[in-house]
Image (cartoon, rainbow, N blue to C red; front, side, top):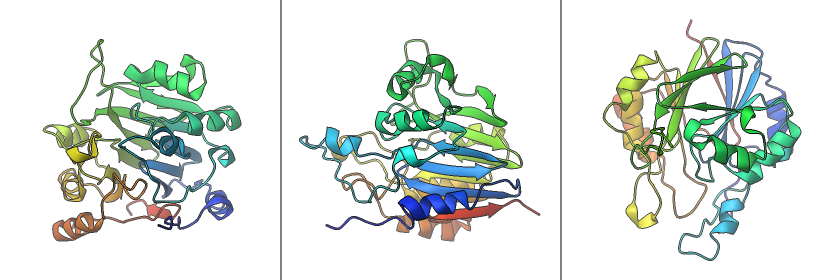
Length: 286
């Protein structure tokens, strides 16, 4: 089966990123990198959220009962991404914390800093091949500011809220505050009692980035919200925009965005469905 093609890839993608440096606080430029990965440029900063830009999972699971057969052609080689200020990981699953993505990024971005769950900081340092001191760890409800961007940890349920031996969350989402923007990147999570309230306490969300691949036990992997649930969460928190993610990368673990679109339309929830490698530009409220 032919691979799906990104909207832009390699040189064309890099040219589009270079042409939109994000110097203006009133405009937020965002590109979907596939899975839950996003590149954001705003207020003169460039952020990578949970990037997965390799075939490490396809190789790892090739001879197992969970073959990670790729649906979408890889967008760009990670070593070609330069000028990155901050990278995040929401948890330790490889499509959110990938050594084959992180090591080239840190090799080619000497000032790059890293946000990860405090519970996972040692593993994140190991996979990225960096000193532990270069990683800022967060937990549910804790915040830190790096390079003018404030991050707040939000507990994620993948499939449940899970703590390490020290009582720290191993699955997180993040609320990012940069200039006039507030963005929620959920990581991998189901909706759960209290999630919307946690988010409302952070203030109005301009953009929610939510998974829609659903939770199906027959996949033998932890699940996420489906499209209908993602639309409802965005509506409940009053998100100004919502984008779906975490689909169309692996054949065994994907979903159509059609249900997400239909439910957003029914609820009157503003949304968009970016293509991998496609830039979307949002504007601040007037």
